Amino acid sequence: MANRSVKSGSAFDTEKKLIGRYDKEEELGVPAAIVEWLNAIMADGEQCPGTSCDQIHAYLKDGVVLCKVMQKLTGAKVSFKAKATSTFVAAGNVENFNKAASAYGLATESLFQTTDLWEGRKANMLNVINCLSNLGFLANSKGYSIKYTAPAPPTME
Image (tube, rainbow, N blue to C red; front, side, top):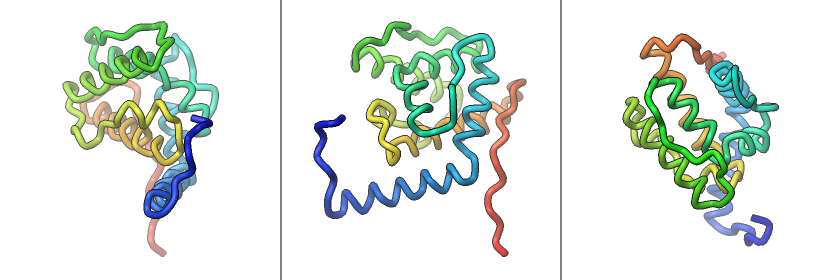
């Protein structure tokens, strides 16, 4: 997305707020907790190398890991193309993840759009992180053996 124009006006303000919200989630350790949970689920497969926004984006971008996670959570086959060489194939994988997550019981408003993940912008990745965090809590409530442990929210002093 190197050729993309810089946002301005209210779009700039909105993106700045979303980046700030992602940064707060990062300070709380939410992305780190998600990576730890995903790596535990994917113990026999590819691991996310780190907890930065860029590393999480690169790990999830083609949607393959997301579909594999849903297969492990549900025990059902989730269709995906392992060689996501184009945007369209990756978008199909992410859409299949969203369908499987919805069928698993994740609320529609917790899902993210394909472009949120594909673009990899920090503001958009907030939607991805929120989706995976909600999915982790849902998996906990369904008794999935690998527990998602989110950091405690800050307390008022």
